[in-house]
Image 1 (tube, rainbow, N blue to C red):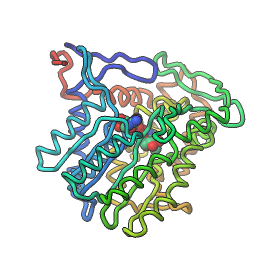
Image 2: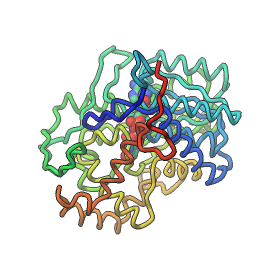
Image 3: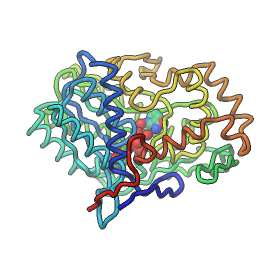
Image 4: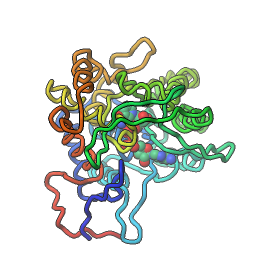
Amino acid sequence: MIIRPKIRGFICITAHPEGCRQNVLEQINYVKAQGKIADSPKKVLVIGASTGYGLASRVVAAFGGGADTIGIYFERPEADGKPASAGFYNARALDEFSRAEGYISESINGDAFSDAVKGETIELIRKKFIKIDCVIYSLASPRRTDPLSGETYKSVLKPIGATFSGKTVNTDTEQVLEISIDSATEEEIEATRKVMGGEDWERWIDQLLAADVLAENVKTCAYSYIGPEVTWPIYAHGTIGRAKDHLEQSVKNIQNKLKNLQGDAVISVNKAVVTQASSAIPVVPLYNSVLFKIMKQKGLHEGCVEQMYRLFASHFGVDRDEKGRLRLDNLEMRDDVQREVKAIWDKILTENLRKLSDFEGYRQDFLRLFGFGVAGVDYGKDVKIQ
Ligand code: NAD
């Protein structure tokens, strides 16, 4: 079949296998061009490994650090003549490329929040890895079933305490609009914490420790975001920000648990990039379009793989802030960058969207997430789908 993009709001329901494979290859080639990272972890588990920051972490761990990797993700395979989700194709390609260069590369497609997948992962580690020395936690999910209570929680992207009104862009119609989002209820705040907070990260570490599959000096890292004031009501001060506070608070508990292994836990505050998760957050696609324009003009632009290369090359030590967090968002948050973003933000309208922002770059990045618009791919060629 010929696969074309079918966009529904902030998601594309089709994905192109060859385009996804090519995207992964480009990330690998970027990492190879940067050179090998000395003393990098050698047995790496990435939870949330099929797209965005998790995929890039796995690429860097393997091709920059020379690691054997396990990737956990939740993706739709091909079925009934319909293409798989992009993450499925990405992970398949990464396994293929990694194995071709002699690395162990194993993937588990299932619900990382479940104890069943945690157990399956432990079995796999025992069989093929013995112990792991790095755990990357990069899940972004709209829901989680708590394995203890069996209850399913749904996360929401809402402000807390007051209705939020602000600018956003409708990426289909290219209209800059004022939106208004009601503040979250206590129940919604708690549900978002249950999904995107630190509970599951800690549960992973507990179970890996209990199974004795973590090596001496093990490192674990989870990702967070802060961003500028225009996004605070909906991000840092909203339900997702509250969940990230909880994620950050889990670091202390995890550090204590890893003491006997001389291990470490850390949060990396990453830069805003285009991923499936970030495309779903109101305001963020417009902010990214403006940010990318400024960062590209200044030669500072980075995507997932550039950020993750910096993370691994710094041995998880770059620019720690007063709260002990790594600050890979240091270039995004530079005063001159944010001053220029703010000046554009105040002026941006539907009529000047393409002139004042890099909306075109944003759109291209969005399509590329699903394997479309990738150079060298023949989109007119028939693709075999199961
Ligand atoms: P993404 O949507 O690209 O990736 C999410 C990953 O989680 C995918 O691999 C998906 O398969 C996996 N996943 C989701 N539910 C799962 C489940 N139940 N079981 C197993 N796997 C599951 O997201 P992303 O933007 O790369 O986000 C990853 C982390 O980085 C998040 O913590 C996010 O908050 C953080 N972050 C993102 C940005 C950004 O701009 N995108 C910036 C800073 C920090």
